[in-house]
Image 1 (cartoon, rainbow, N blue to C red):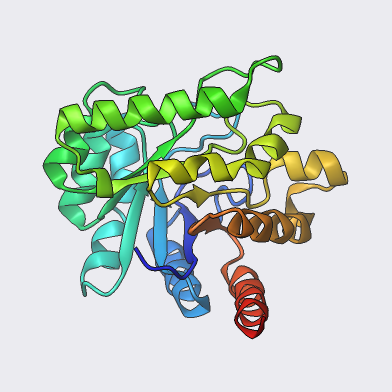
Image 2: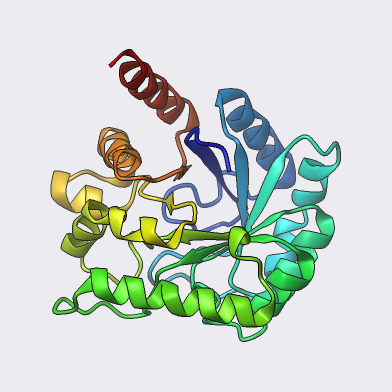
Length: 261
């Protein structure tokens, strides 16, 4: 994995995602957006076919696969783009991998679908394992719980035949946490370093930023950039973002300052 911070551009081919639902639901606009994000500096395109916002309607594996397959084959056709699929369903993961995706981004950390670990292993994909307990608990020590969650993920991954170097850890900002706990988790990203795996952080436009700043979804870029750079300072090596150009600029300034010191 590169020591340079990588940018994963979010491409939701959904009608109801919290920030950009419906914007790229048709394949033509989705492909245009993917190319625009790559031109802006995205290293990875993360294609999602089901909204994970609270209250979103579940989507069948068949419908989700149809959505992501409307764009993944075209994105992967020339072999020049790195494509991830945002899914917790093994059937969708298999279909996306067959179409060229090389990363499976599972918001349930391979705990929701019992066949997901096998899908990751059999397709030889990398996997983003998200720390997601399912329900928030304000009294929980999330640092200790996160450590235990990832230790179990590595154990189950090894049992399924997933190479350790294929695992990417995501602290799951916005998933099963109070809004205050999100800040605490970001402050302690250092606890993940002992696992020796890349850390992916997705804070872009999320509700904990809006809660603190009293900003609606479309007005959270400044907060997103601040949280992203704080995450890089604490060891994040991949940022999952909506606003690729702004994050690329922020990282260039960040890197220039670091190299000048």
